[in-house]
Length: 290
Image (cartoon, rainbow, N blue to C red; front, side, top):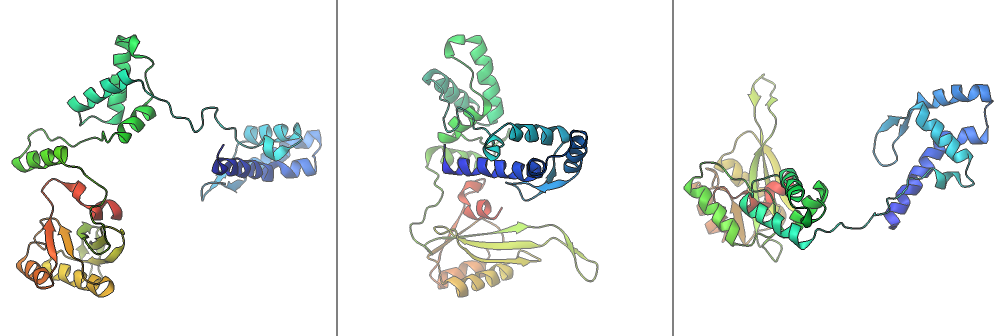
C-alpha cells in the first residue's frame, strides 16, 4: 500500500469519526439515538478530498456509528478499504493485443469504447482468445502504445491527406527544442462574448506566447481583434520580458503571414516556421492553454 493511499484512508477514518465521535463520547439514550442521528444527517460536512460540502444520509451515519462502537480502534474501522488488486495492472495476452492492433489499424477513427465493445464481441465468437478486457484496460493498453483516436473526414482534401501521411511517417514528440528560447509558439484563441460600456458586443481574442522547452508563458494578453498590429504588439511585450527567441512557430493566419510580421521577424534574426494545415498536434500553445 502506498503512503498516499494510507494517508487517504486515515483522512476518511478521521473525517467519519469527527461526525459520529460525539455520540461515542456522550452516548445518547436509546430513545434519543435516532433523533441525534437525524440531526447529524441534516448537516453538511466539508469533504475530505474535495473542496465542497456534502450531506450524508441517516442510514450511512448510523452504519458508521455501530461500526465504530464495536471496534477498539474506531478511526481505523471507519477508514476506507483498499481493493485487493490495488496497484496491479491487468494484462492482455498477445492474441488479444494482436487483434486490437489490427482493429486499430483498420479503424483508427474509432473511440476507445467502440474498440472495447468490438473486442468483447470477438471474444464471444472466439473463446480461445481468453477473457474480454474491460474498457479501462483497453484504454490503458492503447494509450501506452500511442493508439489514439485519429480524425478521419469522409471527403479528405489534398492538404488533409498530406497531413495524415506526415503524421503516420514521422515521430510526434511532446516538444522539439532542447534549449529555452530556442523555439516559441503563439496562437490566438477566442473567448466568450463581452459587452462594452456602449452596449456593443465583442468576441475577445487572447494571444498566448509559450516557450517550447520550458512551457513558460512568455506573454498572454486579451485583444478585441486578430491583426498584424495586435500580434506585433504582443510579440514586443514577450521580447521585453524574455528576450529574443531563435525561432517562432505559428499557424497560417493572416496576422502571422502578413508582410510586416515576416519582415520584422527577419530583421530580428528570428526564424519563422509555420505549421502544416490540418496538423493541430504541432501546437504546444493550444494544448497548454486550454
